[in-house]
Image (cartoon, one colour):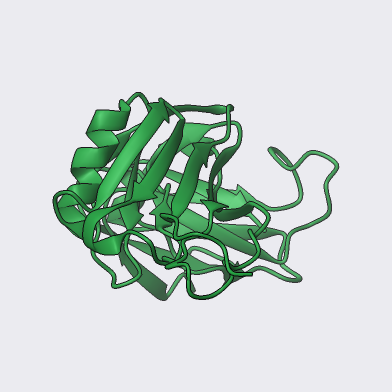
Amino acid sequence: MNPAAQNEKQLIKLDPRVSSGTFILVSPGGRTTSAIAITSTAQDVQAALEAVYGPGNVSVSGAPKAWLVEFTGALGNAPQPLVMADGTNLTGSIVTIFVSHATPGSDGSTPAPVVEAPAPVVEVPAPLPAFVSGSGTVDVTTKPLGDKAIPKSLVIRANGSNSGIICIGNSHEDAGEGYILGKGETTPPICVDNLNKVFLVGSAIGQGYSWLAT
């Protein structure tokens, strides 16, 4: 026997260790909301989603850090793909956004799909230690790694307000591979296997940078 028709409901939840910042939501078609603060009310989140899905097609309840999105109107009584989330601009010791099917949508003609277990959609590193010299050296065998294993790669993030260039090499003289980075932008993982130090030079370094060992 088939179930009655029901609207799709999805839960958007922030890890409690997220402390500040904003995130955006992305529809399966690639349309993005405006930035949503972690303190946003259900009404705020609904307004942001209606700009993407259309007025009357979503209804949001809940409280900051945990919002329940119900698809209504033209999107009601039907299964809906999961909303995607981007938490790049969130901060905290753990920065994770969970999006899950709370109630699968159905038009009543076929059984509703099995509810999926919540899974993290995006996780970004917590703020990293910043170096602010005009040129820099990252010692990949010591601080802040402590007694951890030597990493295989580094990701460098520019913290300055202006675009600049970061060049990477195993000495100042051969730091020739460059990346143009704006504020908050990162390099792809840079292989540092078998190197004890990575030398960083360029205009972006003078404005401050952070690094992450992977």
